Length: 508
Figure 1 (spheres, rainbow, N blue to C red):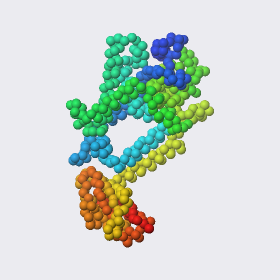
Figure 2: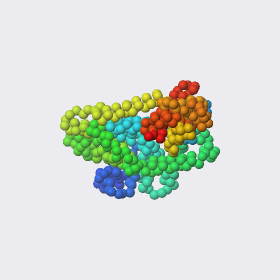
Figure 3: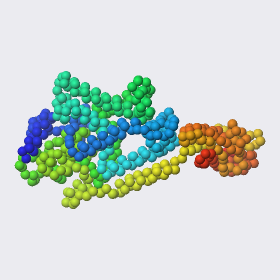
Figure 4: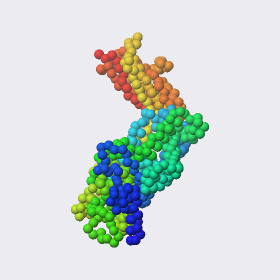
């Protein structure tokens, strides 16, 4: 207990020093939740938040997620994937000049952008599901703003020390030592920001080639522009704005409330166990009081500058660092862990009613999200399994709708676009079906009832065709319109693509 008392006295002294108060809190609060609702006026200048380094399960989890996400971001453009000759071998590449999106074995064309839409829908549904189960875990662990801000704070802590040292440094007058620490921090931030912007542009061009061009100052001007743009935004949002982005700029805190219910696991202060709170003296009884000793460590650890004991707040990103901070104190005062923990509103009510808390994952909300998620995933898998390397679109002439030839027959014009997604040249045979007596011609191949179109590898060919119908057959068309099909056949593989269109005549 002697070591515990010494530790608590040290924490109290540190709190008083950082808040300008006496160790007993007579001249001010030991820790202030600068973004607490009751302390927040309608408008006020930002009060800088100095999050304290804590150790524990959730801090280690955040380190792990940071390492994984940053590795994926920086390393992915350098991964190779062999697609054959004359094709890029970068595993993930958004090739704007060629109008392609390469993702390992997938090659997405502009006409297939619905695949990207499907992936975004899957991501959104997954986020909804995770949020309904465990709150804002995306915000607390994997959001780019959270990851880069956490990295920038780590750099700041390396140069300037932990919370109390950073506060004292900012309050001190300028000196050579302070200038060196600040310069080192900001220089490192700039280097990280440049690496972030540089990694981003590597997703849009061959990474080794573009990196070599950067070193020789021969890269396209657009590359320098976007590296500078992303570097600036990373530096400002991760290093300067920090929690302001989550509180004021991000729409998700306003939306996520609709994803919660009374059974959602949220980082919560167990008021039924913690109150009445207050300092605890060595050897004093715990009878008639709560486990919270009002040390303020949960506030000091919060990167958003709030007090979790005030209840659920828009600013809380559910990073759970307050859990680690509180658990450490509970260990020192020999009380059970979990005063701050992932908890549900319903379990709080159950404890107050003397019932046993329980976890309810399967409930209407989560079941609905899971079913819709599985449905969209199944649709995506079916679409991918039926994906073809031949795509055809047909556009009928609009002006004029038809032309009457000298022999009285009616002719319509069509633009037939054939996309060859194979990596070799293909010959396609074009024919029509469903319009009896019609004659298919091509300006370059007049008089032919069929035509062949040669399309280069990974290219689109726009071929013009005429469809003519004798006068007696055209006059017999009811309403002046008749549906028929263009049939495009790959002469090598036998693959067939059919597109419906309309033949228009004068009508009656």
